[in-house]
Image (tube, rainbow, N blue to C red; front, top):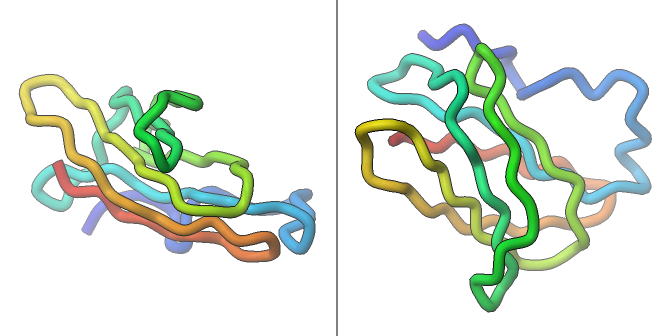
Length: 98
């Protein structure tokens, strides 16, 4: 089982009720992928943001409510896209296998 925190990164100090949060973990063969990159693309496929994954493969975005695409980029694997819906007051949890 991967070493990522169950439920994603800690939300301590975050007012979840006022935010639209997309977070999750990038894994390869059930192991976390550190130092991968996750891109946030809007509904038209335009680049919006990018974050590196943590040592435990985790990432987080604060996004506007709506439909988004996450693109996971890691060495020696084909990029993987996942669609997700962000909603204010909700935490969208995503697991991306590369």
